[in-house]
Image (cartoon, rainbow, N blue to C red; front, side, top):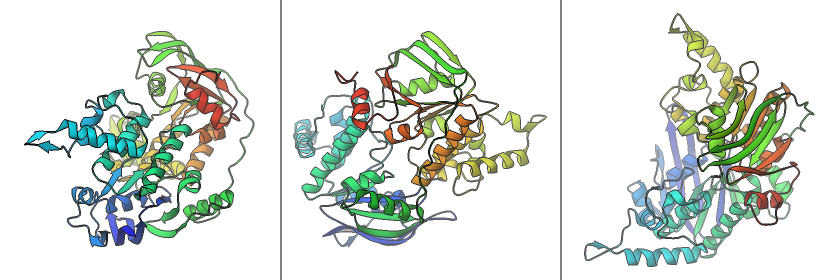
Length: 487
């Protein structure tokens, strides 16, 4: 049965046609994957389906009846819930308070907390997870926050659960646990829709796949589970509109002088005696469950935090921060200004900004990062998440070389498509080949293995162990979780 359908829905953002007359149906009791390059329209399509964005043309139907009014409240009331990539939780509140926010049960006009606890217990049993109703969200790890987001939409009666890039911030074991939870929802007859760039997850877990390209739905079919490698190649070709190029082998690199030297560095409760070196011309990966000090490490190298103790020797560094919205972009400024943040003085003459120099620099960096659309006058807020990431990475890469001898890239390909990820990887390797030392911090183990000369595993604010990039996911996962006997 088709529980959710779009009927020739169209959505424009200015001159950009984000979704172009897309008609598709999502059947109940199945896990559906929606994939495509950045800016292909996949997230916009699902936001249209969930009432978060109104269509310029076309309509959305739930159980065969139009979604009217076309609002998130109406969609939720009819059983459609979305977990967005950036969690929408109130950190100061408890798990229970977040779950019932906006759906508080009342008894005699008063809040019935006992009923909310009972309903939450039912939901967590269905999901097969444990959540402490009294725990504050700020105390939860990434995995528990995501489980809370899913529990919240199920608590509110969602028969269709839509997730945008749900495993982008999860280690492999947590990603597997997430898909086990989603399988339970599917087995119970619910519909699950996942937007993802990770094709291996699609082949492993989804029953159907839809491919968006340039705002259009170009492929919709069941996933072929019989030949995983063939299916991966087919989906990659569908996403990119051509046969996906092979991943190039990393050329040999000679390591030079030390460009980052951290010795027994302590910073609050985040860094607890961290020791790490990076040499010119090498790429060092940092693996770890998020929240083990990676953000503070990045900020320390960038000069935004100061160590309480220990030695910090850092060459001039160019940094990609992990949160592009909070630390990487001025969303309401033009793309051109975002591409040269901190460099306006160098582009000025006698205190006046040289507009032609700004445009030339911006266009060069748009090309370097393959940012689409390539209009530097657009506001950064108007770009897709993946293209926002490309702006941040292009700016950092452009500063390496004479100006910066160290590149720190925190989650450099988070939220970007296959082609863009390959391009970013090529640019990072090229920087290392020019003698730039590179520190890549990522939760994507495939990315770390593809780029790194060695991988440092970070646990509770320290480097627990350094391993060869050929280490298996299981081995790295054990180290990242600090499991007894892993060392």
